[in-house]
Image (cartoon, rainbow, N blue to C red; front, side, top):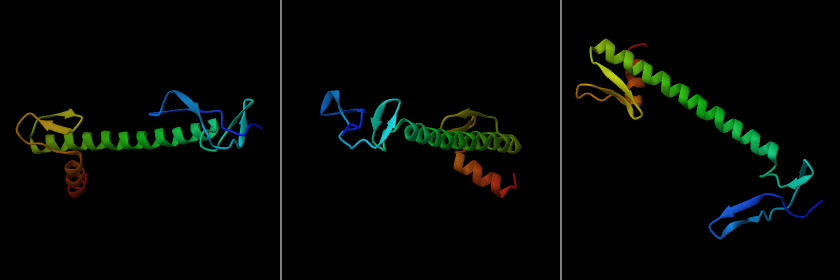
Length: 107
């Protein structure tokens, strides 16, 4: 076993990168890694982050659709924008407001 993790760390102090100074604890594919840089642990963490992002994205898309539906019910023409639903008139409905209004109207 080597004494250090195999991962190369890039930070503001070393433009070429440096070897992680943490003690190696896990062997994967013939290389030793610390618990933070273990490829399986990294893949698991990235998968969790991806799932969290996908859930937030689905929630956002649902809220946008509900906001568009609400605009239609109110007789206001709108379109989708990254910041919310921006009607063509001067009314602005944010995601949070659309979610609250949809909840109040019983969807």
